[in-house]
Image 1 (tube, rainbow, N blue to C red):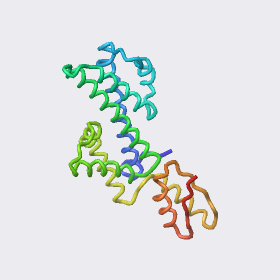
Image 2: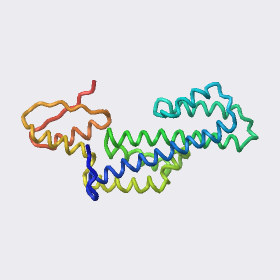
Image 3: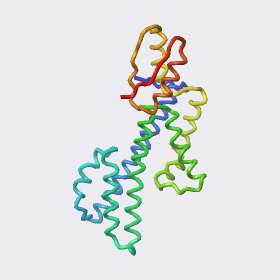
Image 4: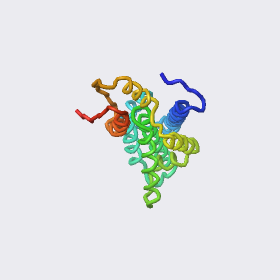
Length: 212
């Protein structure tokens, strides 16, 4: 268990995690408000409406795309002249995808590396600078004051060569077991390169990646 020590690398990492969780919690609350106002208030007739309401409470990666897809189906049934109603539903789709993005970022932080977390923001910024129009969900996240501050914290840690508190804990185990063979199981395939390089920076180790 990580202990939050103010002004320490671990403390800052936990600040990043907490900020993502707070933002996600706020978006889930907004999603529930939209559901109440837009769908229940309009007495939506979607054949999948009951499924949607039953699954909203455990909104996760498995249901996110399906929820947004159901709402898109409802949008297609609304006349084009009803711009207010269509606009409300598109806002709801945007919040769905914001939640999905935030869950991905939180997973990147806890299961992978800070570099991957930064990579998402760099990729989106590059697309915008290249003239590509971002989705409303991505655009609102990039301009969100809370997320901008979070990105500064990520840059601050990476500038110090700090990735994830678990990495240093792993390296301490590696240093204390020179000459012994060990297998390190990694939850995210894309983080294997960074972890392997960290281990191989310790004298006496020659780690290799095995994916299976």
